[in-house]
Each structure stands twice: as structure tokens, then as C-alpha cells.
Image 1 (spheres, helix red, strand yellow):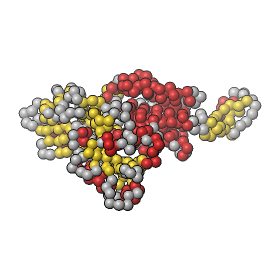
Image 2: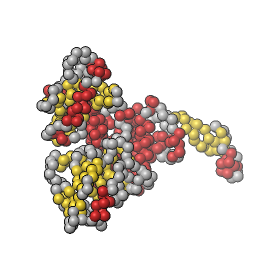
Image 3: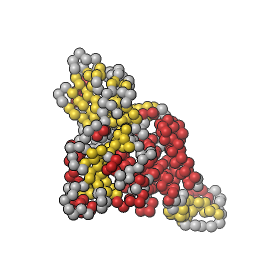
Image 4: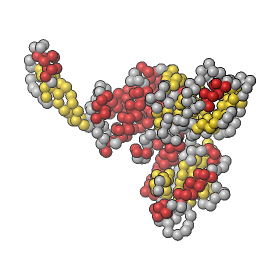
Length: 461
């Protein structure tokens, strides 16, 4: 049984006698008390980060499920049901469901209002990885529970695999631009009339001596080059990715040309690289600070191969199973804003401080400017389109009063710092034909009236 959610929405599950498992105004009514109690026994999420979960609120006769700004899929405790959060942004608070499933059904027919649009999070990911954001900030955008029971879904509902593929291909492009890593690696070769490295005695006797090949010697020696286990692994993953993309183009929507371009860009560099590798070799790889992209690319590559059970034929399956996962949309949105701040202010990058930390606080962005210093905080909440959240404003205001922040900005008097909250807005600033220039951010923003020097700016995604 699948309970569908879109981002920023809540579904209620309520018990009502003599109800025929119906849905009304976003509430699921059930008359099976044992079924209701199984929902009421929902356990807390297994993921460590608070960003990767749905929120469960319980009362005596009602359970509320909220998607908590994420995209993903997960089991609903021990109810043998799962929640599926789609990358859809609700531009209206009105929506309805039809034909609530009963306990034996496997599908829900549901209809959202016409004012719901699907968020192109793959394009956001493509842009974020194509910029100049440090790799350490691009890690752990997705949390996956490989130890949990797999969830059966249709191929067209799979958001995890396209996300991992885009992330892998962008990392691979960075590796290709820099040049493939060269290391010493061992090869076995049956040499004629010469010896190199060490002789493999057992194999030499079996393959050469007993067969009368007296001029042959089976040796193992080291070679310095690109055909090492790391590059062989990456090529293996690339072959899985290529096959998947070719057979599932609709899953990438309008991003398919960008994805195919990434494949075409990387493939020639691996023409002379083999595909045979031993999995245990990856455990002994030593990190190289110059080739820092390799560690994350190998990690994502392992996810992709595990996703297909190391069987390339599964890249064409239409009915699949997926591990529970959550994509951290607030963090992806934050990196998306950071990317556009960097490309819109090429000559002022040193004025943009990302994740400035002090006393256990971490600011999203600190703008150093003698005339107009600013604190920018990203909030992945549509509520700001028609209002504001006092708790968020108190948080940002607190940042502006930290002595370390004021010292960093060079403020020595009692003046207040401008605070800006950037949020997603379907009708907001369109970055396809606009820029996030820090000198004009305040003038383009809307003042939050109850507060002094507090502004908000909607960004179209």
C-alpha cells in the first residue's frame, strides 16, 4: 500500500466508526481499529539527520503525516505500508484524493489540484555540480538505508537512481577534466624469453612447465598508468549508467540531453581502460588530495551498482524495488542558491562566506561589504510566499547579534545588519534570465513589515 505525498503537504489518518475507508479533504478515514492502531504505532525514523524523514504527529483518534521538505520513500513503521514523497511543489492549499485503497489494494488513485507543479530537482543538481562549489559541501545529499527491506515500485516512480546517476556523471566529468588518476598497479603477463617482476611459481608450473612451454614465464610486475582498479571501477559503473539512460529516457524529462552530453563527454577518456576489477581492491585505495573527486565518485558508483544488484540486465526492468531513501531538498536548495551567488558575482566571490560557523551556529551566507553587509539564510518553505515564520526570523536575527559575526563584517558601531531570507516561490525571481547580484539583493527583495531590516526574496525553481 502506497500513501502518496507531495512536498510541503500533510495527510491525516483518522479512525471513524462505520466509515468505508474513504478520504475527505486530505484525511484518510478508516473503520478498522486494528489497522488504525498499526498506524498509531509508527516508530521514529531510522535516518540520523532530522532533514531525512517525514513527521508523525499523534493524537487519540488521528495521526498526521507531513513530508518535512524532502523527496523519498520509506516504510511506515511496521504497518507494511510505505509513504512516497514526490518532488511536487504545491502552489495551492487545495487538493483532493479519490478512491482510497482498502487493505488489499496495492495502488491509490489520487488527484491533486491543477496548481501543483513537479519540481525539476535533477536540473538543480546538474547546475550545482557544474559550478565551483567545494566537493565537501556536495556530499551526503541523499540518505539510503541499504539494510532495510526493499520497497516495490514502478520504474517511472524511481527518483533515487536518476539522482545518483546525475551526481555520478557530474563527478566523472570533473575527473575527466582534471585527467584520470595514474597509479602503480599489478598485472600478470606470460612473457617470452624474459623475466620481469616476480615469477608466479604455481601458475608457471601449471600453465607453462607441464605443457612444455619452456620459453614462457608467467610473471607479475607493476605498471604506472591509468588502467588501475579505480578507473576500471568507474568505467564499469559508466557502462551501467549508459545502459540505464538509454532505456529510461523519460525519467530524466527535459534533462536528458544534458545527461547524454555528460556520458558522451566522459566516455572517450575510458576507451583504453578495462572493466575487470576486484571489489576488495577498492577498500585499500588511499585518498589523494589532488584527486579528491575519486572518493565521492566511487561511493556513488557503489550505490549505483548495488542499486542494480551488480546485474546490468536490471537497468531495463519496469517493476523494481528500491531501498528506503530521502533526498535532502533544503540542502540542495541551499547549494542551488550558493551556486547562483557564485556565478552572479564572479568578481566578488571573496565577499561571500558560506557556512560561517561560530559558537555552534552555522550561517548559510555572510556577505562582507563595507557599505551593505548582509546575512542570508535559505528556507525551503513555501509559507514565505504569503507570510513569514517568526521562529526563522528570530534565528536569523540572532546570527546578526553574534559578536564574531559583527567582527568578521568589520562593524564597530551599534548599526543593525540587513537580514535576507531566500525561499522557493513559483512566481519568484527567475534565474534563467536574472542574477543574484549581492549589490542589488536588498533592492529586489520584499521587506518583512513587522521587523526592522528583515527582508525576503522568492526564487523560482
